[in-house]
Image (cartoon, rainbow over all chains, first blue to last red; front, side):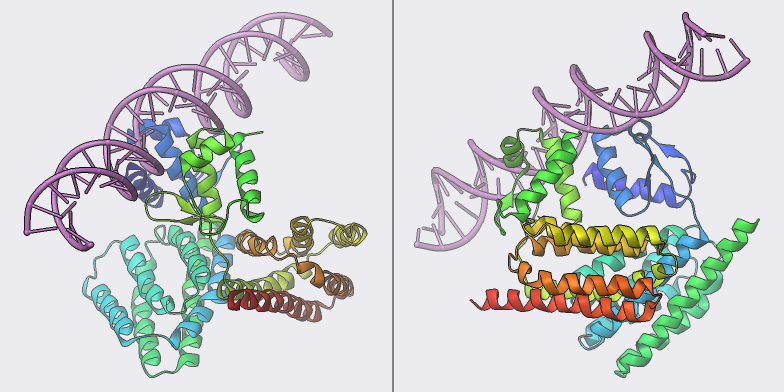
Length: 213
Length: 213
DNA sequence: CTAATTTAAAATGTATACATTTTTTGTCAA
DNA sequence: TTGACAAAAAATGTATACATTTTAAATTAG
């Protein structure tokens, strides 16, 4: 595999697991030495990660590991609310049974493996959502949603307490599938809205507590 | 100035002016030779332009200049309609007179210089919109809007006939400012929606004619 | 001691050289 | 002629070396 891709994955994971702490400034040389690759590779990975929000520009030298803020989380949630129900509504008409089946398989897999790592669970959850949006046939919309997910997933690796939310999430996911199966697009979209809002509120409130402390 | 930035600007403009034709595959070497810079610089510019839709991946080698489609234009318009009125509504409460003044200056400048190049006019138009959204204080939303504008502006360089639209656009812009000044956020947002939809329809219909021919 | 200017160190930008992958070309056998 | 396989050409990935910019430190004037 390409070293660029390897480093991209590794660095992203290391940021999510807070191996590199928020606020820390990472230079090309530092990372090149630490991961034993050339600076060129580091540069590419850094730029890719910056465009996805995993790193932030920091003056002229180095890139900074971004912190977490309730305000930002709230904004991300708002954007999800604005775009994901739209994608679902547009996709609903084109959803195939094959896709619904895929989604159902994912739910089963998540339910069966209760001891998944938080970031794995988050990734599978997104795959579930993603399948439902896929058929909207709007490449740019899907790209924006993927970007948003990247940003949000940075927060999700952070909150171990997401597990507390896992149960109700699973129930809502199942209900969502059921509504889509029966062709009830409007209710599905409404449920999705509540679903995203609930997850967002939980995250925002938790972050606000953290900030207070 | 950094060569990377120079090449980025130059290449983007050359694509917009169709110096490189849609469908054409541009390799690093080709561009490095043509612009007399090293491949490293080309690589950076290519990646940046790809993430903004000015170039598209093309297998393992080269990047392709994307074409134009009415379907894509329609999607971009839809996304603008979904996000820009939201940004305006959020920003309205925080809009300062200074910003309204800036916006008005822009309108005056555009009106005074009737023989601006299409891409310059397009850029100034976007600056006008951008000022109005700025105060929403949602960095991610603003980033998404900037991205969308990039995509749309690729189309605008293409249609010389945008000039036919310029007059009605100016009138709507003035009315928008007036509504914002009087604090009528809701009507302003509605007008903006019609404004974006009108511009989008014009573009889409023109593209459909082109595709038919 | 403070502030400003100079000087050294460090970081990034850029070019060149080499390695690897991908694409194309050309050959040969069926 | 066609198809597969091999070789060559071309393109990109990666590393190293050099240039430029930026940051930090150190020295000196006030």
